[in-house]
Amino acid sequence: MSSLPAGIQSIDPSAFPGDALAAFLVRAAADAIVALDVDGHIRTLNPAAERLFGASLGELLGRPLTCLMPAELAHRHRAAMGSYIASGARGVRWEATDGVVRRLDTGLHVPVSISFADHEEDGERLFVAVLRGRTDQQRQAKALEEALAALGESERRTATMLESLPVGVVVTDADGFMTYTNPAAVALGIETPRDDNGDSMPYFEAYSAATGQPYPPSQRPLAQALRGQTATADDIVVRTADGTEIPIDCRATPMRNDDGDIVGAVAVVRDLRAERAAQAALRESET
Image: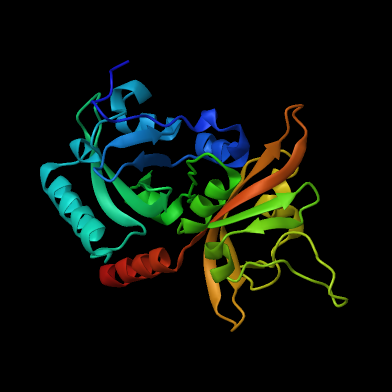
């Protein structure tokens, strides 16, 4: 393993037993998750990031993220982050921005979609980058997921990180009742459903994009996760309080205790409106 540059310390997510949920999500995520300091150096990353960059944790720690980008993109990234740190104003989108990264093992360039989140606590500022490899086929057919990262020394810090992410996060107990939704999920209209008596019901209200009817309960990703499966669906629609229909991508994974028993499920939810609009525009341009 390579040593880190002077003054740069790595962060090991597994070192924080109080952050079991966040650590589980980071390890299980199919997307690459990278934490950066204010100078853009990699402080920690998950296994998916190692696979994306074609290098091990030891080879990547301490490197600037820009060394994994083409020169022009690296220049734009440094300028944008420098401007943001100085002014607090985001000059570019922080959600699902298209980019390119370079694999260390082969030198090949890989097109990715990058989302960023900003977090500061106790004088330490970190940026979390979530990178997804993309192709036209993936944009049109692959069920998408977003992952989470939380770095810190307490559950309070974990909650802060979860709530800063630009994707929805839903956590349920073993019976399917929601125990946590982050602000991004609430903004999509995801909330605890209630019956006529006001009592809580499991899961969240979801509808079939094809028929507009309630999504079959047994086929919902959260229901499948509670049966021990990792499930993904991108044919789901949720409805906000004003009736707006939002197509979503939902990936749910079971949570297990130390004995292997399923104690709940976690779903990561992404708004597909921008992607569907881009697909529609592409189809229209081809006619």
